[in-house]
Image (tube, rainbow, N blue to C red; front, side):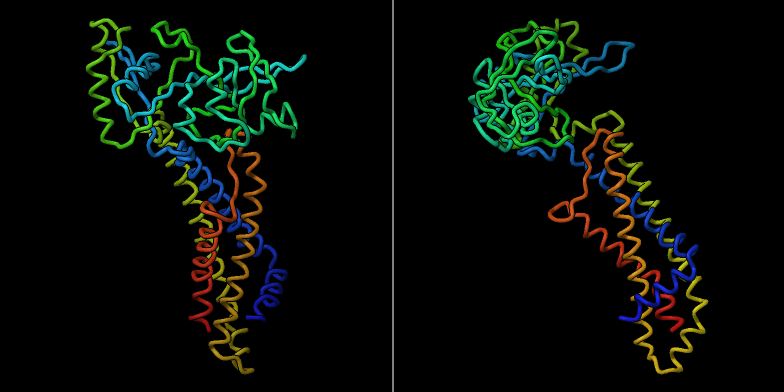
Length: 388
């Protein structure tokens, strides 16, 4: 085994084109596979990264008039109160999302995602709190909750509690006081935001005073309650729709984790890119094994000479498998480096926050080590067990 590395080095330096094609091709295939695997994991974990996602459902409403496509519409602002009164064990919260809320600081302005939420929103999603109290902050009409990165951007490393932010929503500026700072949230969530303020009281009527609409979240104690809630909504239709229009309205509740793949083609894109990643890795592996096997046939004389000078078959098997392991490990490390280099560009283009984790539940090491071991066996089998 100890002689495998010098032998491999001499072989690669003597046949540079072979080394570039074989090791470089395998490294490229591994890097493409790693990046696409990370993307698939990012998409399939959508909303599953939120604390308590397993029990969270959302209200879904669509309307389809004859001759027109089906259109998703916001939730009724008054439905949350009706559901909370009818189901004592249910936790209900509304959100009004804004993608272009503007924070004004002197002569500059910065756009952030903001959500107006009910106080129970942070009961449904208990985000890690860095400082302050989220419930108390949302209970105040001028209270605001910000993420840690936003707090550091405007207030530095000092405490942000009690500091003020001027935020313009729909062109109307308002001063808020920071009441809590939460940890930065992952991007792979359907309703992502970095600023949270109290939802206005006027949304309790049917005025539909917000152009962005209302999203209603439900934290169910058990899934059996979903059917009861659906039946309740059918018994209490939205009064904003007259009886003639209600026949075109569909209402129901769905798990939050299923929203990202619901009828928008995302599932197809993820499946296709996942398949491309697997095919890229398989092609790289097949190409590497073929070239390595063909190259091994040229080493019959070398192996014969080693036997003449006293090498045993076990020694030859160890050396040849060691050479294969060293070459594949080198390709894997190069592929990992290429993936690390490419990820910032992928994130900038795709609006994702993909990253390679080396430890923990999402570690990249198990699949990488499994791939290295499999390719080593495939590439080293013929020279190690046949030619030897």
